[in-house]
Length: 379
Image 1 (cartoon, rainbow, N blue to C red):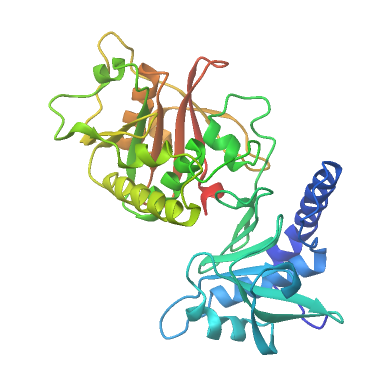
Image 2: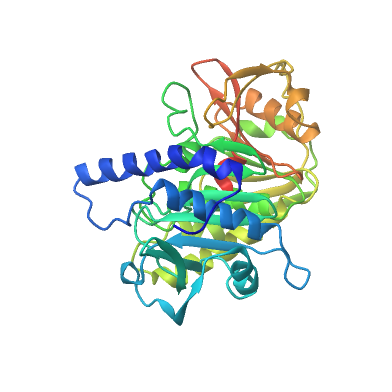
């Protein structure tokens, strides 16, 4: 391969990512799966990460590139958009073409022939376990793959920012209490349909993080109103009756046109997730009815102030820690931790303006609130 990578982190992480894909394919083949993408080799992985990183630092007409590169031949996708002449794979080419392919769902197809990587065109469809390199922002590269069932967000494998390497630990939930949304992001559960409840919460999380203003979402049981003890009255933006737009979509059967339904679901998620940018907490029940937004959280009568939180992050080398609430973030983090401490059946999601994203849930094992930091999985 004539392309010579120079980005140190790409070389450091390439072997581990290659091993990850070997394991993925081996397990899938043992289960009888056949529609699988070609496994990427170490040199291919290093080269694609390298060219993605250097292109991310460039600008075209004042804009930084946002690109999704998929490693596959045109024959492994349906309806490929093919260039008459393959393009050379380098940072200059990626920077020039980036404005035309930055929309979500568009992948730049890259393949190898005679030891050379080249760009053959674009595609909207990729096979299971297809190796994807995303340029998210300058210096930030996300390595991911399509899920085996193709539903929901892609599974992240690693995140590189400059020389910082964060490799996802997909075993991090094996010996601890984890909420279902985290298990799904680690690909430990199957998202069976477009309106699977966990799939909806993942989309909600991505949207909350995406608006960049910070926000808090409380998910409470529909059949239990005990959570009201932890909300200060009056609630400024109380919804009467609860808004059921997202709830109705979540209850739809599979008879609806899937593309239409997915678009409608995305609009409802964006609608409600946008409300989390308002100061205070947005409250929905576990059926996705909107109850209120801009709500102020208070300690429930007779409940102690939360003093310690068990903190975890699903990355290789990440260790569980016991933290004081103030070590995790500001008032938003503390108040949501207090809410879950008082209402252990609830789950809290907190997006920070700096991009951090935390799930708060009650751990029956540790008998305390757990904070799972998951922005590495949401990029």
